[in-house]
Length: 433
Ligand code: SF4
Image 1: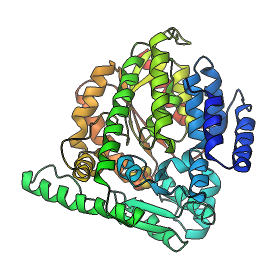
Image 2: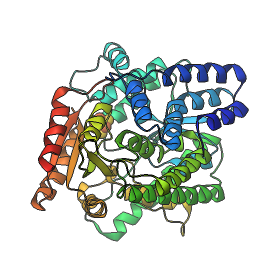
Image 3: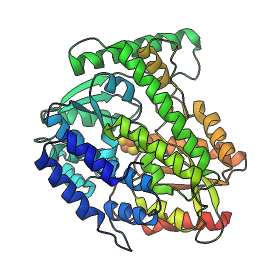
């Protein structure tokens, strides 16, 4: 079992003493700060840690999440390369290049989004209607420009504001490598699709050269793909076991476990050990009852959200988020019977951000069925045209199928969620109770 002490002994070996001491001291101070009415990300985490005091695995998970960015930055300064990426599906390629992926999207989740957004608005003259996530990320990068990792692998996605943000940080010394991404066609036939796979494979090949100065070690990447498949099988096992004991691992730690599935918090072996520990805990766990007596199984669709109070509201009312259709495709399997870069290109093209949401309906249906979900939350960020359109399409489809849903529009902000959001969550769960 990996507890906090195990984590410390591992970092003790890897890091210079002074840096480790300072970090662990700061972590200890954070750990002892538990408030009843949390108002920021760290307080929500510590409250959740206390709510899970029976689980060493959950505590270990929060330790990994809290130390992820800082450890990667310290490692980078000490010669262990790291790179900013989406942290969603590039892990096998980045790890095969001996590099730690630092998830751009997770930066704001534990960062200083409020301050970052202000810096960004002043410095880049961001219009108010810009997606709050892009605004905050620009500010975070700017504030880290002198002491953090400077390499960026930027997967050009459907999101033009984010693509522009990469251009804007260029002038602050960030070394950006763009991967031009193609989009899976709904129509157009096999031939067109194969051309896209070929193009994207070539683009991904260039990432290895950018990171290491030489061609990819294919054998190494094949091992990393096998690792990803092994870990995601364990992740799916946890998802399955939660159906019988939904509240043993509640919503917030599940969100973090989900995010870690894309980058392992920079520590693949430790993340795998964590998954093993959680499986073992779930095998022997006593049933955790809902505070209100009844448990309502639910599915979460869309962005992963930054307002942790929304997840707390779900838990408090006996809701259980049992499946997650988010940018982390834990339900997919990487092919191991073809060259690794081609496997990656095919995996990306099958992934929902890079194609019509119509392609994904069957996966969401499967999740609902497997977890017996009674309803769905659709979560998008204010100002995101893509998320909004995807969700409208999903909602319309599932409404016709008779699956109730509630749309939540949040913002990329730290702190407590708006009262309006939590009211919607409560009203929806009460309706299903
Ligand atoms: S929330 Fe939407 S607009 Fe904002 S970065 Fe993501 S895809 Fe782009």
